[in-house]
Image (tube, rainbow, N blue to C red):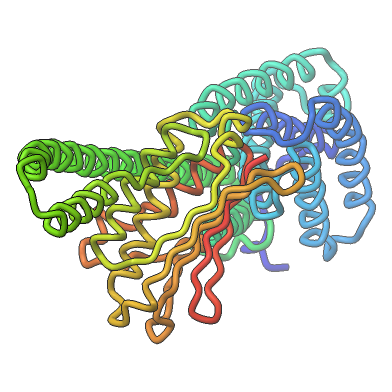
Length: 450
């Protein structure tokens, strides 16, 4: 017999019932702190069914041979994943992410509780496990440890997740979380597989101490990972807001320039009208009137959509397009924006960013006949549809990041590239979606808002 692979004074295994309750409570704790897309009735129903299901999985695993242990843990994790996925109504990636965090938390709490419980048992001098397990101290220890641990976890994690917005989980974040979970589980249970490694314990209490410590480190790493992801998202949000403010400032400067141009036009009109009154030659007078009409027409091309904010945006962008030799056509029912309860700032940001991107893209085209932009705002079923199309040169491939957003073509990527992200953010605020297509030299941005 190889004593190197035997645990001295091995502690009894954690009861299956305790493990099932701990895993279920971990799922319930995360359902309480994350954003739920599912109604409360569904969440309660899933949680109610989840407890007996987790108990059944644990007792089923207990009846299987030792080689079934890994499969049994996968079944337990699958049950936790199902509780989170169905109870919160999240996507599969988000459910996997939260399920992995709940699994590590459950491993930590279960190990810590059993370590404390066995220590108290030894301190009380009770050697008969059935006798010790029957006393009320065991139940009190379970209630106190679980209540304190999951209460602290709730206080810690509620600041790490938003209940108002879904948790954004990138593929990299999901893969990293699963990898941390697997390493944590493997290292914390290594002593149960083999004591003949540099990272294994050989004494019963020591094994559980290592398991608890490794699980705590895994939970701390996952917490730090989520905190970093949240801070990155906040920085991106701040950068997007700064980009919106920059866009609004540019709109202000353009409007100021237009007002100054109108002032100069009014000043010139006074002199031109005075000259026409003194003109006695009919042909010269007619030519002067034609020149006056052209001057006034340049500033009388006002958009009338039914929404004053949209009118200003489209009028300003129309003049910008005229200056750059771009043919811009707009067919818009601005009253639909009022029905969608869209704020003035969101209207200015959404349409301003969409048209700025289109103007920038078409301005680079060498052929003036290809400088085309079309905007449409109309109702389709229960949705308000905003469609902005522009001709583009498909010889330069469009690049996207991991989230599907277009990468900016500008050199200063720290200050640019937030136009489409701002549009997506605004659409999400109103329960809408954004789609982007590039085909046959036409780039199409479509926003659907209920």
